[in-house]
Image (cartoon, rainbow, N blue to C red; front, side, top):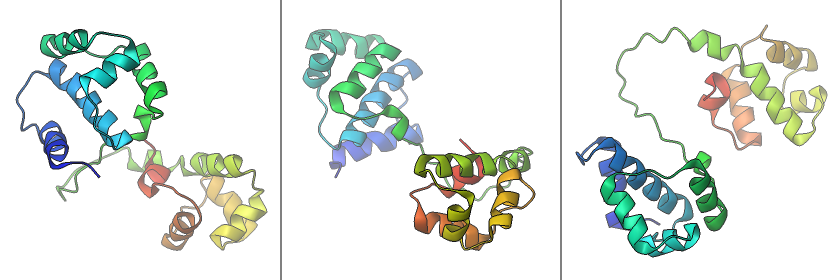
Length: 172
C-alpha cells in the first residue's frame, strides 16, 4: 500500500497541482512510478545504488531537471524487477463529449489482439470459441473483422483472461 505522502505526490503529478517544470516532473514522475510499481519506499540512495551513482549525483540531476536515459531506466527495471511499461496512466472518466474518428478504425484491429491472446496460450480457434461460448465460425469472423464483439463475448474474455477490455477493443 502506498503511504499518504506518496499518494499525494502521485496526485500532484497527474493533476498538475505541482507547477514545476516538465523536465523536473519527468524524473519525479519516473521515481513515483517506480515506487508505485515496487510498492516500496524508493530513496535517492536506492536509486544511486541501482545506477552506480553517488547519492549527490541523483539529487543534482533532480535539481537540474535531468531525466533518466533509456539505458538507466532499463537498469532500474532490472534492479527492482519491474517494467515501466506495466504502469498505465488511467484516462479520467470526465464524460465530456468528444468526436474521436479513430474509434471504428481501432476497433477493426480487435481480431489481431484476439490472435495475440490465442498465440500466448497456444489455443486453436475451436478452443477459443469454446471459451467465448460462440461457434468456431463466429470466432473466425470475429478475428477477420466481419463480426464485432458482443457484450457477452467481452464478458467471457474478461472472465477467462486477465485483459483490459479497453485495450483489447481499441489498442493502446
